[in-house]
Amino acid sequence: MTDEWVRVGTPEEVAARGCTLVTAPGRAIAVFAVDGAFQAIDNRCPHMGFPLNRGTLRDGILTCHWHHARFDVTSGGTLDPFADDAPSFDTEVRDGAVWVRTRPRTQDAVARTLQRIAEGLREDIGLVLAKGSVALQAATARDGTAWLAPALATAAEYGCTHRAGGWASGMTILTAMANVAPALDAADRPLGLYHGLVHVARDCDGQPPLVPQRALGGSRATLDELGRWLRRSVEVRDEDGARRVVLTALERGAGPAEMSAMTFAAATDHLYLSGGHALDFLNKAFELLELIGWEHAPAVLTAALIPVSRATRAEEASNWRQPVDLVELVARAWSRADTLAAALAARPSGPADDLVPTLLGEDPAAAANALVDALLGGRAPADLAQALAYAAALRMARFPTTNEFGDWIAVLHTFTYCNALHRALLRAPTAELCRGLLHGAMAVHLDRFLNVPAARLPVADPTRDGFPQAFLELLDAQQQVEPAAQMVASRLVHTDEGVVAALGRAVLREDAEFHTYQTLEAAWRQYGGRRGTEEGRRILVAASRYIAAHAPTPRAMLRTAEIAERLHKGEALFENEAMDGAGPA
Ligand code: FES
Image (cartoon, rainbow, N blue to C red; front, side, top):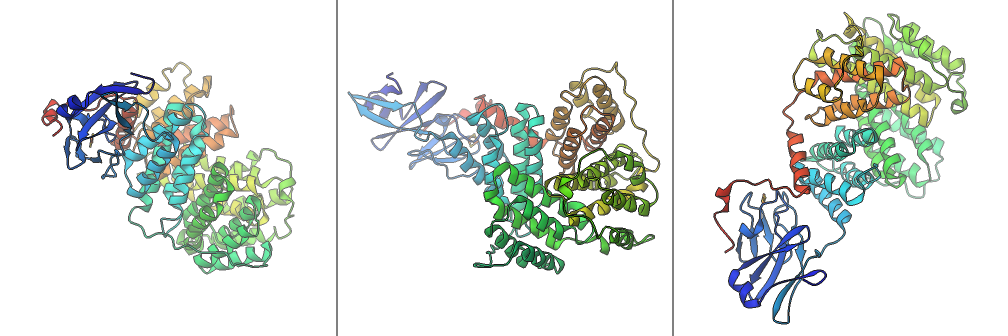
């Protein structure tokens, strides 16, 4: 062996063997004699690790004997997207011997991994995405979360352009799991990315792509004019017009604050669009841009505008009209806020939880008027949204399991909407967006029947121990809502260390449904502003109840992720000697 080169044998010996296995640092290389030449590829099948020297080589194609992936023996390139290209190696004949270089031909692990992630998204192959998530973290750094950004950008450019319906739950899950990644155990961060990527791929699979739009080239329209045009387009559900206006505003240099003001105004001209999802999605789009860079704004924001343009409006829902016309009620309350000052961002911040009893009360007018009074009284809009999010979290904390199971989603919708509104108001607190406070308050009001009878908040038992393992074991069984909440509450008496990570693990080991990811992320976000407080503890208790209610599932995604992890570590997954039958032909 010299530096990177290993002697394989004489040409005659190698030709006679057909395939020679060479040991190199960290890997085995299969060297094949083919038509008087010598080809070398990594001996581990890139799909699930079967030894390729036990495959069949015919007409230049090497076929693995496990799941029958096929490889061009000269390059390692696969004909089957579910597998991966096998690393290939240079060979040469010198000094009467065949030599193989132990350094693979392709060296840029990050670029290669991102390419595979892009292919996994296009082909909707979970194992490819799981392997890419593990490999990307390993190729960059084990700690931190900066390594996520290129994968997020890859997924954004795909997910925001390959679905005619625009931004959907997959992009939301992807962003939510990237947001919460710093609070997860480092080993679970690739799992979070994998979940997000899988849901983006599923959302786009079989969907017509989004027809591209363009900016109004040469437009001299001001941002104020463009903002009005956008609202008018959304008003009549003209998504193409809305996207062109957004692209024009971006081309004219609008930044995050201007775009936020413009788009959230359009998203709050009507009440509680699509059960809160449209505003939530739009906020997530801005959060994603904070992670991957503003240069992706054209693709991301135009995709997020589609669910806003297509949204159902609470005005169209009977429960917002009867027995109390909440739409009229909101309009009446808001009419007093016409004089709301523009300089909302400069207001001093302070807790607004004194409003929570009113927000949870029986009188929707009192709730709406209390918020308007608070705004007119100079309180910061984001503080009001934070109080609203806390009220919504209490609806989840007090959700009795005697309710219909599907109603968990109703209280979750309100909570995640209020969390999104809080984030959006921190970003750009405009008077128009403040209307969302009243919309959220009406949703909290409507959810009141889901707290009848109200579940009791758990009493912490400081003697309980074993967190997080005991908590996770608890969630191996169904119907553990109250025990799980009590365990979390008991842990929080001592410390919050590891609580969000355990909740994250509890979500990511399941085949979680969209709203469970939202619960985790919104609770993490809202707890972050209330760390160490009783209110913060109740938010995490609320999340633990929701997560426990939705566990366990078959955990199929976890199985795939574990396979990817084991493959990455070089573990052998095949054990069936019956498959060893055929050697290289
Ligand atoms: S095709 Fe080779 S291990 Fe699956």
